[in-house]
Image (cartoon, rainbow, N blue to C red; front, side, top):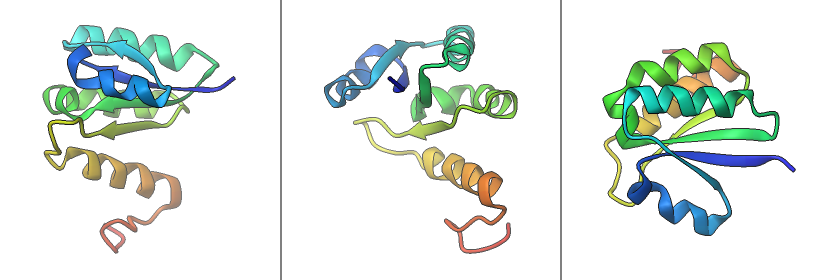
Length: 108
């Protein structure tokens, strides 16, 4: 069975467990890289979601992994609210997938 995995600090991603998603805990750049590498190599993982707060601290990690793996990587706001990073990252993913940034209504 394919599964979705949420990566982030324990207390910030725990609510996603109620939705049946797998949880992987990371709170530093090294942990995030290790966990994302592990998830990207797991053939059962069909979607990797990373909490927005950890991406704000390590934006290069998600970009690097997006270039290396085929598994979709989505940035999610947590229960603490959004800082706007998740929509920017989603726009990048959409533009890469279809060539147009439909979330901002243009080619940019």
